[in-house]
Image 1 (spheres, one colour):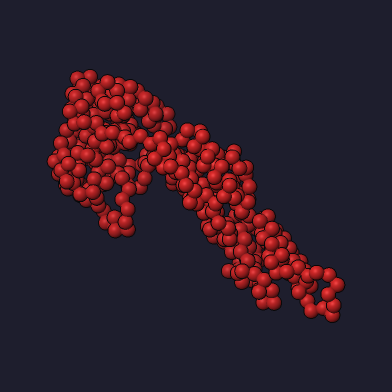
Image 2: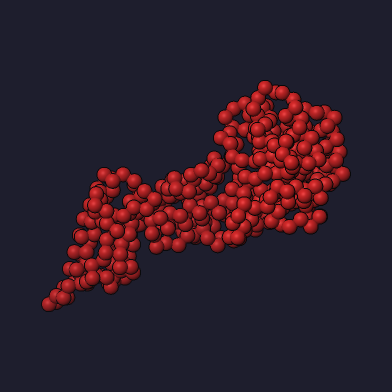
Length: 388
């Protein structure tokens, strides 16, 4: 486990870790036979300095332990018990623990690669919430009371139960990752905190099929790029950002079974790995795709108005299109309701859940689902046609 350039260290994911075996004569005072501490650096020069410092401190501390436990001819002073010495050891160890911000940075450096910007934004936001409530402390200094205060603070801000759950999932992930990476012997106080998950949660509705037909007829009457996007969503169930960020080359209308390929682009990422997929085109979505290709907008983008910067303006699209959609749908329905409607339409024809997940780009549980290439376009197209 030793490395030649930096004694008493090993590396994991590029980071240096200090390690020393506990001397045999002192091993009865330790829980583990080996000491492992993260040095929180990838720089060999800095790791060498930190390793020397750690060795010097340990040698001095072990010398103290040996004197305290030496066999003496008399008892002139009270010798500290093993428990007291263990407490001192815990205090010394806490000084080498990362604080929350350091843990967050490590988490993002190692887990945030090839993840959408929203992943980093959400993790940072949650950790700064915790710091606002309880301060930026070494991980071992966070207590259950801090976690309970954090929960109450989120609820007092009016967050729904699902939002509270989401915030706790991020802080638990950052905390657990740092504990694992630095081999810390501490418990995560944010685990198992109770809150009402249904508080303020509004069940999203599906758009009735008669209303979908009305909307599609209006789209064909108005026949502009905004309505093409609405029509495209109505019979594919794709997410708004997925549709708004499409290229014209993502449409394959000359194929035996027309489809649109949803894939990652530099200007628009995808929500999950399962979001990358081929979606069959039929009905109003096929009409919209043809209009997008037929009308020359002198742009490679299917919807240039939402791609005028280096990032697809999904929020602008949502605001404008939901405003237009509102008179045609029941209260509480939005563009996202087309995804719920698509799910219901496929269920109504008894489409297998695995095929539904593939069409909608939903993540599917189970190891077996990650094997193979999934269902062919022929199969998914047949089920989509049955649903309309």
